[in-house]
Length: 90
Image 1 (tube, one colour):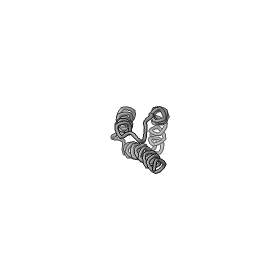
Image 2 (cartoon, rainbow, N blue to C red):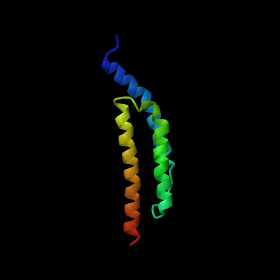
Image 3 (cartoon, rainbow, N blue to C red):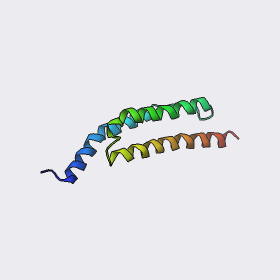
Image 4 (cartoon, rainbow, N blue to C red):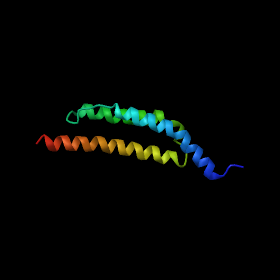
């Protein structure tokens, strides 16, 4: 009988290629931090990519919250680039 630790380990192993793919897709997102429509498009793309790639993990009690945390981190990264660009443009 598999233990809960085995189940967790299998979940993580199943998620690993998806998370690598997510990272690769996020690296492809390009935008101009000084152009609001470009920032909006990048933000929307982050949401769509995460929803698509992590859809199977949404109801998972461990990986579901991870998906939301990753989305938040990527969106924060966009906002940080926007703030840095605005500060450098003054």
